[in-house]
Length: 383
Image 1 (tube, helix red, strand yellow):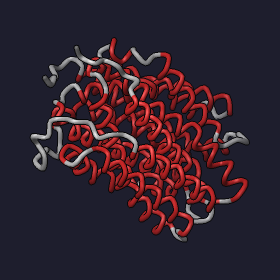
Image 2 (cartoon, helix red, strand yellow):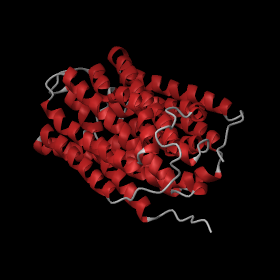
Image 3 (cartoon, one colour):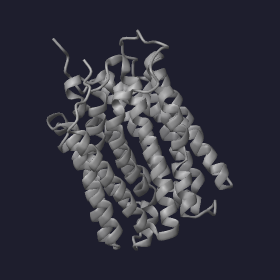
Image 4 (tube, one colour):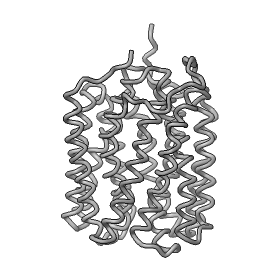
């Protein structure tokens, strides 16, 4: 009989390791824009550049990380990524210029590629195939809980002890992620492609383009949520990110089985529409209430975007191609999270953050149109 259990020891350990890693990322999400516009002395465009710079090296490294995860294993890649991310966090307080800060973020992009690709490929290995959407929903709780609680942790550390302790706290979370990863055994799998895996998983590219649109929009929101919160008069500048993460977490739990019951691409299209609506509300309703309403609507859209698009992408990959599929799909994550903050940062500098959010909504609308058309086309499904 096929073992269709989902909540196994490796699955739980992987989820908690992801939680630790993305809590560190959450600390950076809140602290980095403030550090760039504060001690570094840059502006919104500089903050967007620093925030999104990691996407350049992460993008370049994702395909190679996918190949390495298929040939050398998922666990070593995750350990390397977690250690390198922690080193980057410890180096940031020593950055005295935007150039140095961007250089450190480029280093963290390598770490992001290694940890994220290894983690998602490992998830595909240990999750039952017919419960992949549910597995992604539960596993991604670590990511969104990290993004929910990381910013308040960063804000507390920053207000109490300053930037140095905030970045040290982020590094500590990275170390916890590495320790938990060491407890996960490398799963057995087909290694007939050892050393010869593909860098790019071409069948997954069309769905990845839709994923890119959602992340370009969300990347701009994440980069400027703290600054926009201050502009609309919110005293707690991390509250929007906290609510965003909590809404995604609650909806992922309540609707965990939905991505396995609804066709992936139509679900992805609906998520893009919700993201566009939420960002538009934030851009036009410039009050704390308007911000929070827009955050909730956006978060509902994000709830289904990752399970929908990753399910569509992994459906095109055989077991020996999962690392390449994860690398290809996550390369588009880097494109989105890198391109979005940088592009919207330029818009924010010249036209303001609300205009940047409207631009992000436009990205989501274009993505929804593309995915809607894609859902009418035949798609390769792996055996």
